Image 1 (tube, rainbow, N blue to C red):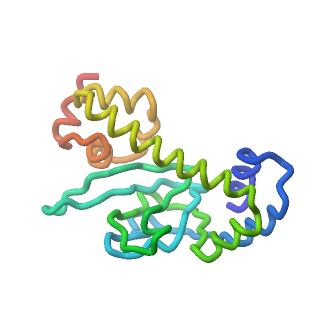
Image 2: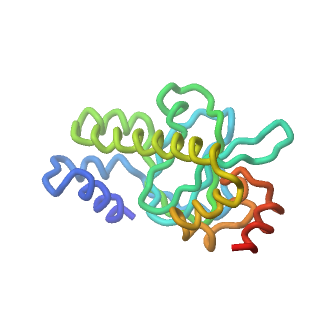
Length: 189
């Protein structure tokens, strides 16, 4: 797992990285089974995760305990509830494993030390923030304008592996479509 993270950082920052081994030492490997919570609403988010293998769901519950999925995150991406992680305030989201996962986790103290020790890692952090923000805004703006059928087509074009990798219920939640409507529309494609 460390090698996957190391290669990810090199791909982002290049080969000439001072203290790369120091950066990697701040991360701890985690092996998590399927359907386990990494974070629940109301808890303070204490870690940022790099996904070496597996899939995570970021979601909220409504008043009726229905899930609304903000994102489904797969390998070689980062996951956290950044507002809670940065502020220390309780999280408004949940993070759960969709598959067995191999993660590299860094806590807030390690993250701050890493940012001080390895200033160029600030570039990776900015990329994490920008990617998270851009994905959220794009998804919201796109999905508001698209019909349910067009959302499914969008997913098939931009994230086709999810269609066979995760449950229809999870995809429907991600697309903001009723599960039965999703199944009916998917059958038409």
